[in-house]
Amino acid sequence: APTPQRPHVVLLPTPGMGHLIPLVELAKLLVAHHGFSVTIVTLDASSASKAQDALFSSLPDSISSLALPSVPLDDLPSDARIETIISVAASRSLAHLRDALSGLKSSANLVALVVDLFGTDYFTVALELCLPRYLFFPSNLLTLSLIFHLPELDATTTCEYRDLPEPLRLPGCVPIPGRDLLHPIQDRSNDAYRWVVHHARRYREAEGILVNSFDAIEPEAAKVLREPEPGRPPVYLVGPLTQCWNPKATDERAECLRWLDQQPPGSVLFVSFGSGGTLTTAQTAELALGLELSGQRFLWVVRSPSDGENASEAYFSVRSKNDPFGFLPAGFVQRTREVGLLVPSWAPQVAVLNHAATGGFLSHCGWNSTLESVVAGVAMVAWPLFAEQRQNAVMLAEGARIALRPRGAAEGGLVPREEVARAVRELMEGEEGKAARQRVAELRKAATSGLEEGGAAYKALAEVASKWKTTN
Ligand code: UDP
Image (cartoon, rainbow, N blue to C red; front, side, top):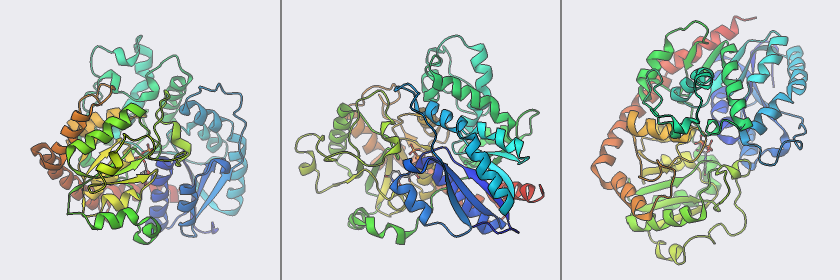
């Protein structure tokens, strides 16, 4: 609970575990290193997942959570995209946020409001209450650079971005083919696109942007964005902020960890697509047969396939329906029982990545997963699905060079089993895999030392913290 003396910050994440997790880590650092207390404000208690409840109940006293009352969204078209839903929910929650912040202002020494990704409309309330407005960007500098550039790109481009004749060259970033750019900007006639451009414009209203990245993983972009630029908020590289791995908290789920204990060091490929990613039925089958064909050991977090347009369908619910394995190819479970373990829906990812038996990560390239892999020193096979994952995959394969890309995934088509097997074998046993592991070991070192007292990320957060402390 807030105490009157401590500086108090409100963090307001966009719904979704992938957004909540790094903000919770930010909260912990503000409390532990800089003497703050924190309230994490979420939208609508009714959509909270089990995972979210567990996360909140593990927090120290100086971090509280507060759910805003729900707002009606039933007038939105049934095919409204997630970015639209989240943005509309935010814009309709301003009065609730005003009430909550006013309440906190009277009981705590409130010094800043920190929103994330699609929360820029909350700035309106912060302005009314004379509260400094900050933004936490849970992805990388490549994506932030794209956001900064988007209003101009919108004004100067007539075609869909996937049809751009040349890759997009953002300052200090690897060139990104148009089709690999951020998923929600790929259909410019969709409301989701308008919302993303809207937020991109409002990013400039932030007094500072904290980014969950670090120099070594994208050094050129870091150089560019560290330089002050008129009209652009200062950028603070405070990452990598990743979920702490608490061995005690993972006890109840330890079956897969116990299985890992039985496997040789560095021998297991961890396969997971984040908190909500699902594959089509056909792709799930090819992946299964490809893993089998690779002859490698694997630990696969399996979700029911979804054949709809939107691969992020399972986003708000981390539970798979019905029999989680019923859709796998006939005999697959039986044939791979000696080398593979299937875990339905959710695994203690950070613990798995840090287990000595884990030697590779086939990942959807969500930014949290990527950072967790880096911090654990695990090289990746990139299998992007939605959001900014395709451009992350390009950056990880061609910039940071810590990921291998199966052919087919890049084109957005079906990745055949032979290609799955080739990429997996190359990662686990080939020269490219070896080189990626060396690079990831270097990044791991840089990440760790940046977070230590006196390191770059530590200093960046200290700078922001001292600004907040002197506001009032
Ligand atoms: N995660 C996990 N177990 C799972 C799937 C996901 O612990 O089975 C965690 C993962 O460690 C990461 C987050 O959920 O911290 C996923 O975030 P990311 O940005 O990688 O992807 P998103 O879920 O946003 O697509």
